[in-house]
Length: 315
Image 1 (cartoon, rainbow, N blue to C red):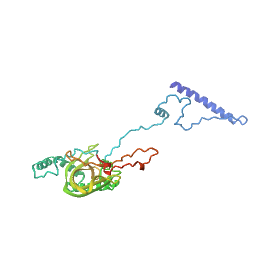
Image 2: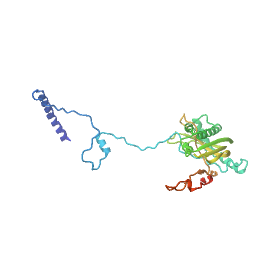
Image 3: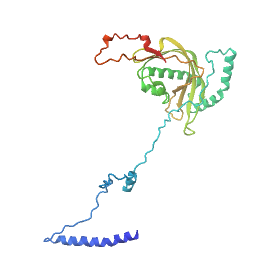
Image 4: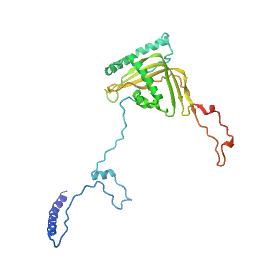
């Protein structure tokens, strides 16, 4: 390092003398001499590759850029996180078997009611924590409000109103409600409520940090509804518009408590293990016709089209 500095310092006086001599010579009009002054140009960040290195192994571009003085920002593969709602149901409510079928006057119904009262201790603690952030929260009024949210969300689903549906359901519930409904027509109607809705379960979990609280309230709703789903050909796939059915549902309503601008939205449903199986879906499939040769036509073959009943099948 010392030798390089010494050579540089020795070369500076020589360059200065040469510059002065060139300047004196250029003043002579009879023998003009061009003067060369060292001028520093703009720094080039891109240096073209040398000739003859096409077949050689390419060097590391990041190391070359670092040597040229270019700083390349490191790329991170990040996964987006949505904190406006949780990713699931914390400590889900387990509905008792035979709910809405057993009378409270019977021995089994009275036993189930007693067990529910014992399990309300944890829910009461969660309700107290929810009331700290939402002073207007009451179990009686909230059950009716949850039923209104349920009806408004399903009406927005039948009308394909995405903006309104996003304000009524969470980001977790939205894809579950809209998946597979692109080419279908949905007819849904809420007929009546067989029993008044009531709050059966409440939890107040936190996520990421300790103070980031979410309120999850499970509402039991027993009602009468009609549902009919038509495919893109206008054929009935499921349900009926004239025949209502009794439906027992357990709705999970969620809210981000620490956000003052948040609202209660539909987060999911709890399906008990003892629930009956769903009705089969009638699908329309295409039956391919005969393979025609280039000189044949379809009409002279007298091909018999199967009956429409054979086109539909159950899954």
